[in-house]
Length: 250
Image (tube, rainbow, N blue to C red; front, side, top):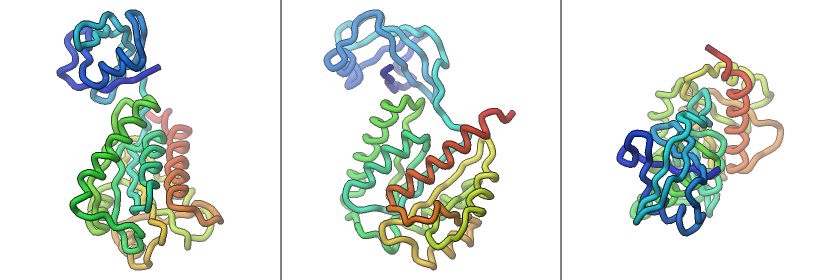
């Protein structure tokens, strides 16, 4: 079922009035007809709607069932991703959205292979935000996760310090006991940050700074993972743990 994101201006009573690019998608790409159903997401909630009519440049949809669809996790996952090279960041954002992250923070780190010119940072962020929106629609998210501006490592840690739990997969961490302990610390409603190093990995000083703000280093297993694989693995681990263990909490 297709999903469209709107704002308060698009709703009036039991009706949504969909315009602009989503209207074009409904009319000319999907070729929807009156009676077709789809989801409309507003303020973190999705309603089941039926297309009443297409008039002029507006698709009019009536709400059949409010709060029909909720794909949010019981915790708020934030991915802090050390800037990878090539188009890997686009893949990471896409998969992070699918796996339930509410925010993605690109981070400049000492061993990042790629360096993005200051003049290009805004356009990169806009491109990445568009990928987040597309992935949110595909995966039936009720919100579009925010892709934050590219941050320095110092500023990223300031943001991470405000998280209820900050997890850092680190290749030099032995054993899985720390990983299990970190997962057991997750509680419903928590904000959970996950920091993934770039292709070059972490410098020891960067890990020391993580530990200074209360970050928990964990292992993702015995194998060395690429940065994009580590991001997907860590998010999947937290997503599954939260869905299996926290949904039933009161």
